[in-house]
Structures are given as C-alpha cells and as structure tokens.
Image (tube, rainbow over all chains, first blue to last red; front, side, top):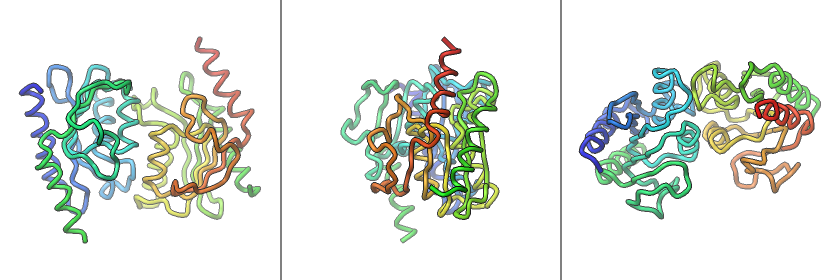
Length: 148
Length: 148
C-alpha cells in the first residue's frame, strides 16, 4: 500500500469518527490514481431520510457529479467498513478499480474469506481489506454497544 | 395479483416506454399497501451522471424524502425489469415488503429460478416476477438491439 493510500484511509477514518450522532459511523473517500481526493462522505441514512445514503453511495454520486460522468474508471474508493451488498454493487456499476476498506463486517462478509488480499478475483476491481482494522472496527463496535 | 397492482405495473411500463433517449428503459413505482402511488422514476444514470440512478434507487429516495422516513415498511415496489444486485440490496435496506417486476434479466438472474413465484424466501420481502413480461422484456431487448 502506498503512503498516499494510507493517508487517504486516515482521512476516511477521521470522517467516520466525526459522524453525526446516531448515524452508523462510516467514512468514505474517492480519489484518482494519483491520490487526489475527488469526493468524500459519511453515512447519512437518518439525516437524509434515505436508506441508500451509505457513505460509499454518496461519495460515488458526488464524484460523478463533480466530474460530469457516470463512470469512475481508474479511481479508488476508501471506506472504513466493508461495503454492504448494495454498495459493493454500486462500486461495480461505477467502474471503480480499487477498493480499500477498514473493518470487516460480520454481517456482510463479502470479503471475509479473502482477508488482507489484494486481487481482482473477477470482481472488476482490486480490493484490499483490513486497513487500520482495529480503529475502524472499534468505532463500529462502540457505536452499536452504545445503542444497546 | 390485485387489479390495483396490475394498474400500477401498467403505469411502470408506461414510464419505461417514455424513457429519455439512450437510457436503459426501466420504470419503477412505489405504492402504499392500498395502492396509492408515493413515487415513481425512470432509469437516469446518463442524464444524472450517476451510476446509482437506477429507477428503483431514485423511486426509493423520492418516497423516503416525501414521507420523511428512511424506512418503507408496508410499501410495494413495481419495476419493469428484475432488480440488479444494487437495487435488490437497496430494496432490502428500505424495508419494502413486496416486489413486483416485469422482465427477467438474463444478466442479473437473482430471481430466475423462482419464476412467477410469490414468496418471502427469507429475503425480507415477497416478490412476484414476470408481470407483463413480454412487453417489459421486448422494450429492453429492442433498446439493446438498437444500440448494436
């Protein structure tokens, strides 16, 4: 992993840490192949009254709007939590080429068996999971603990 | 299938038929349990520069915005084409309880093996596929034929 990619992941984590109250704390950043940040977002399903307003979906929509395109070929997405099925499919639709994520989700488990792998696996993108895993998963875990 | 549900599906088909040029012709309607239409949309990925702007996603977002909620429990979604993985997951996220769709997709095949079934199948919603199948699938087929 490149230094610039680590920095971007740190930024995604900071976004997640500054999530609005009651929203599941997830941060997402989209960057171009040189590491230039194009868009970023928090999970905002409650604030926006929108069940599709996961951090990844918002970041993809923002990036496409900014670049006036419906395809994000040659871009990378950084997200603090393993994408859910909806977001994974949206990433695929968008044509994003690299997926970096932090915490593995016991619930989604799309990537569980490929831990810390970095491969295309016929998915249409390469991915790398478990980055800053402890910080990212503690954030989620503490959120749900506080809700119980 | 109730008469009101057939009528709503007809409306979804009309939406699909009036799709903007170059957009994959898909129409989607969300209605409450009494058949009152809450929102509707066309597929608009090109027009909106948004790879997530499938008809279902837009209709879900509109309905939630209108009703000021992030959950659509007790609502039904009517769509002229079998939902893709992204939309299927979004439907699940939204809590929608019934899914009616027209054409089966050879590409997605989420529901292919359950043709004309109507069951929850642990998906969290009931579904009914193949409604006005011929009209819905001809529309899609002719669109792609014209693109070749």
